Amino acid sequence: MLRDVIEPLYRWIAPPVVAVDPACVAIARQQGMSARLLTLLAARGISTPQELGFFLGAPEEALHDPRLLPDAEAALRRVTLARARGERVLVYGDFDADGLTGLAILVLALRGLGLDAEGYVPERLVDGHGLSRRAIERAGAEGQTLILTADCGTSSGPEIEEAASSGIDVLVTDHHHAGTWPSAAVAVVNPQRADGRYPERRLTGAGVAWKVAQLLLDEPGGAGLSDAARELTDLAAIGTVADVAPILGENRAIARLGLDQLRRARRPGLAALLTRAGIAAAKADLDDIGFALAPRLNAAGRVGEAARAERLLLAVDPEEADRLAVEIEAANTNRREVTRTGLAEARVMLGLAAASGEPDGFGDSAQIAPRLGRADGADDAGLPPAMLVRGEWPVGIVGLIAGRLTEETGRPAVVASPLDPEAGLLRASCRGPEGWHLAEALATCSDLLVRHGGHAAAAGFDIRADRWPEFVRRFLQLAEAAPRRSGRSELRLDLLLPASAIDYGLVHELEMLEPTGPGNPAPALGVTGFTVVRARSASGGHTQLVLGRGRDVLDAVAFRRPDLALSLREGDLIDIVARAASRRFGGFESIQLEVLDVATAGASPAFDLAGAGGRVSGGRGGAYPR
Ligand SMILES: [Mn+2]
Image (tube, rainbow, N blue to C red):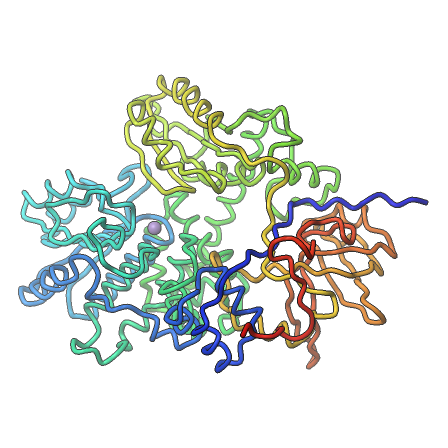
C-alpha cells in the first residue's frame, strides 16, 4: 500500500551560513571545541574572540565593571552618604519575580553595609506600576530619606519629583526602555539609557540591582568579585530567567554564578521553595528556575501575595521559610486554577475551538494537531489578525491568558479586565509573536490609553472602558496591516546531522553550551536517516519512539505530540528534529532524543544539500576551515 507522506508540523529552517572568525577557530581548537559547535555559537552571536572567551572562560571573567553603568558614581556617592548619616532606606521593587529578586538583592546589599533597609512591594491593584505615591508617603512616615527602586522607576518622573520635594531622594535601578529618564532622581542606573556606555544592555531588573550591589560591595581597586556580591547571584539568576532575558553575555555569567549558589541551598527561602516544588537543589538548572521558582514568585504577586514572597526571599529562619513556601505553593495552585478557567472563558469569547489548558490537560489527540498547526496563517482563514478579549478576570492573570492565546494562535493577543469598575477603568496585557513590537504598537494608540508601557513581546496598558471598542478597532487595523508570516511556524535547526552522528561525543560536546535557556537553547538537531521501529502513545499525550539506524536503535520521546503515535508506522523512513540528552540510570548512561518534529525522509528542504547551509556533516565535529 502506498504510504502517505508524513507532513512536519513546522517549517524547518536550515542553520544559517555564518562566517567564523579565524581567531575564534584558534581559541576553539585550544579548548577542544569542534568546528560544528563553533559555527553554532557564531550563529547565536558569539562571533568575536572576546565573546567566545567570555563564553568558555570562568563566569567571573565575563562580568563588566559596574562603574561603567550610567550614574554609577552618583549612586555610590549617595549610598556612602546614607551610611555616613545613618539614614533609613526603603527599597521599592516591582511585584514580579524580577522585581522581587531585585528588591531582595538591594535590601540584603544595603543591610550588608550596615544600613537600615526595608523592602516595599507594591500591590498590583493599589499601587499599580512604577514608584507609587503610597510608598513615598510610607517612607515619609517611617523617616526613610532614601528610596532605591528595583526593576522600575525610569518612568516615574512625577512621583520622584514629589518625593524630592518632601525631602526623600530616589535612586532608580531599572532596565526598562529609557528614551527619557527622571531628572529629579539622584541617580538613574539603567543600561538602556540612550546616553549609556555600559557594554551589556540585556540585563534584567534583578541583573541591574545585582550590578549595583556589586558596585557597593566589591572592594574598590579591583580585587575581583567579592563574596558578598557572589552570594546574591542566586537571586539575580532567578530574575534574569524570570524575565526571559537571553542567557548570553553577562546574563550567562550571572546565570552560571547564580546556579552555583542556588545548588548550595544556602538561602533558606529558595531552598524551601525548591523542596516544596520537588526539586533537588544540588541538581537545579535554569529550567527549574524558569518552570518552578519564577512562576511561584510571580504567582504570589499575581494573587496579591507579593509581600509574602519578599519575606520568603529575605527569610533567615528555615522554619519560617518553609511555612512561607507552603503558603506560596497554595497561591500557585490557586493561580493555575484561575488561569485555566480564565483561558477557557477567553477561548469561548473568541470563538476558538476548545483546547486543553494546562500541560497536564493534554491528552485529546484529535485537538492537538490542529491547535499547533494553526500557529501560522495558511490554514486558518477564520482567525482574526489579533486576539482581543475583555472579561472579568483577576488582572494579575490577564498576561498569562494573553501569553497562551498568542502561543496557540500565533497572533498578538490583548486581554483586558476591570481594574476599577467604579472608575470604569480596564487593565490589559498584550503578548505578541516574533516580529511584533507591542510597546510601539501601543504608543500609536496612546491617545486612547490612560497609561501604557512594556517591551516588544509583552506590554500592558490601562484604558477607560468606553474607549475599549475604539482601541479594538485600531489595534485590529494595525494587526491587519502588519506583515503576516505565511505557512507553518518556523522551527530553526542548529545542526544538520546523519543519524549515525548521534553519539556520546556529540552529547558531551553540546554540554559545553550549558546552562541553556532563552537566547542559548539546547540545540535543535536536524537528523536524517532514521527508521521507525516502534511508535506508541504514552500517558500525558506524549509519544514514545524507538528509532533505528542500521542495526542499532535509539530511544526517543515526543512530548505533547500524541499525533505521532497515530501517524507513524513501523518501517517508515523519517527525518527528525530533536534535542539530544544523556540519561544516567543505575550507573548506565544512555542517549535519549526529545523529538520536536518528524517528516518523511527527504521531504524537508532543510536537508537539501544544495540549499543554503544545508550541509549534513558526518562523524565527530567535522574539520576546521583552513
Ligand atoms: Mn524586569
